[in-house]
Each structure stands twice: as structure tokens, then as C-alpha cells.
Image 1 (spheres, rainbow, N blue to C red):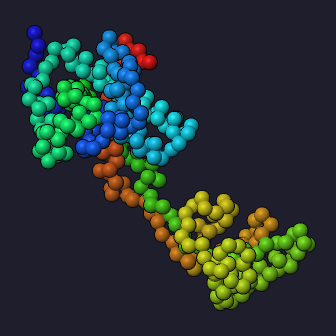
Image 2 (image 1 turned 30 degrees about the vertical axis):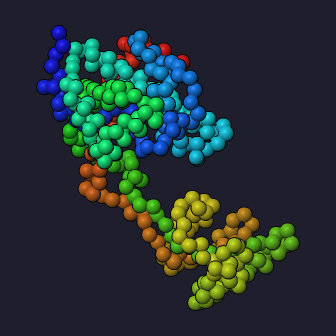
Image 3 (image 1 turned 90 degrees about the vertical axis):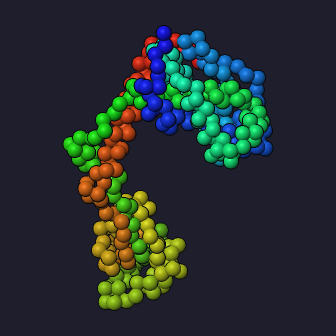
Length: 336
């Protein structure tokens, strides 16, 4: 005897659907080939879950939009690898959905048919302006029957309800865990540090035997700058890097832009202060910082809500994976 499901799960059944967020049907004008993301092949078996078949067409229906995007972004071997990855992820989601629906039935639960009808009416209203005929024609153009669409939506409602029943994370994160996360991930809450850099580069010309004279020139330039000479003018006259015509202006840069030795000097300089002569790779450098921004870390009080939300999401994901792992362990699953 089947148990009434409505009283148990009415709150969950109206939540967002599914492990795999397949889209509602697209607009009219798409061919069935376009809807599946590429050339069609004869349907076949992608997996068997406790004796129930998942077909290749089901996988293609899930990955179609993503595959079309990938085909625009990649080619060749890289495209094939990307397609393989998304198809494997889609199949995994479909297997998990099948396991959940099977567990739903095994527990003797049921859902009123009007739940899925309400969902379909929402889709027609939101995506087709309330025009049911256009919705049905779009399904037909995508080689997708109304019966299959109704079943898929029904299954997604079941998945949402079963997740609500079996995955119950805490509603409040521990203050200790919030503090620990903040201390270990301070970089997440720190804005990128940037400096506006000017630089003069004097080559040593070691191959020409002019190292001493070039270093003397760098020291002379540094002396002039210390006495008030214009840095931009000095760079235009003496610097020999690509920013010479710009007065040595590198603009705004972040860490990892310069060689490590230059980065350490540049990011330690106070604004409007010049560096000593930095010798690196046979060249002599003089740096100045015109402006600085970023590098500010938000306080724990400022990010507490954000951290708590992240921790609760991580816990929910962990609990869900543990629940699904248990279903997989008890199941007989074959993939092809």
C-alpha cells in the first residue's frame, strides 16, 4: 500500500528541481539536431541502473546546450576532451536521478499528478507566453515527446523532495568554524593589490665591456632624480625598455607581473618614493610607485554572513554526496 506523499513533502516538491538542471524546451525554429547539440546517431543504451535503462538520447538532451557552446569555443582534441567530460557528468547526474526515483518508489511514496501539471504550466507561462501549442510544437521539433517531458519534470520534483527528506544540513554554522575558515582563506576576502609603476631600465652592455660605465650612468640618473629631476623625462632620455616613450609608465600592475626580485622591491615601496638601483639579469633598474590600491582585507564581521553561507553550502553538498554514495553502493550500475 502506497503512503501519501503530499503531507510529507509538499514544501520540498515546489523547490528548485533536480541534480541535473536540464533546461525547459528552447524556442521554435530549432531542429532536432540543434537541440541535441550535434549530429544525431541511432539511440542506444548509456547505462543500466538496477535494470532500468538510461538512453544516449537522454544524455544528449541534457548536454545539448552545453555541447553547442563548447563547439563554438574549442576544436580538435580539446573539443573532444571537453565533450567527453560534460557527457560523463551528465550521465552521472542521470544515474543519480534514477537511483533517487527508484528509492522514492521503494519507500512506497507518491506524488499527486497535479504537481507536475503545475510545473508544466509554469514553464509554458514563463517561456512561451502561455501558448501551449507553441510549447508542444517546440517539443516535437526537438524530438521530445510531451510524455517524456512530463516524466522528466515529475522525476525532478521527486529528486527535490527526496533531497529535502534525506539531506538536512545545519541551519547555523559554528562561530568556531566560521573563524577557522576566515583565517585559512583570508585571500578570498582581500582585494587585489595593485600599484601604478614607473621604471627606468639601463642595460649593462657587458658584452661590450661597458658594465662599469652603464652602472655609473644609472647612479647618475638616480642622483638627478633624488635632486628633483622629473622621472618621466629621465625615462624618456635614458631608459631602454618598451615603456621609454611613455616615460617609463607601466600603468597599473598586479603581483606576478614582474620578475620576483623587482616585484619585492616595487610592492614594498611607499607611494611617490623611488627604489635604489636594482641589478637583475645584467640590467639596472630604478622604480617609482605613483599610486597604490587594493590589498585590503575585509574584517570577519564584514564577511561573517558570506562565510556562514559558504560553510552551510559545503555541508549540504557533503551530506548529499554521502547520501548518493549510499544509494550507489547498494545499486547495480552498468555504463556503456
